[in-house]
Length: 103
Image 1: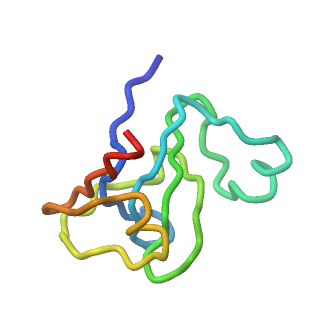
Image 2: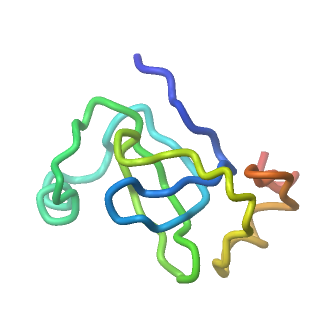
């Protein structure tokens, strides 16, 4: 099994689309349906790599992205998303801290 490069709470940037976000969950490989993959994963990244659930900055969107499409974001700028305060209890540098009641 491949070890995940990113962790929950880490800030990322999508390498193709340029949006910023924060990781809220990770799967060791693609877990959604083939129909979702065919419709949404337009660059057809490999399914046998880690995939991440991400809250997208300046929106209310949550997305699912392959590890190969992500880069670490070291800007330290906060993510503006309605669920950030529900899932995280704070932030230091480029990492959010998961709320105690969610650990």
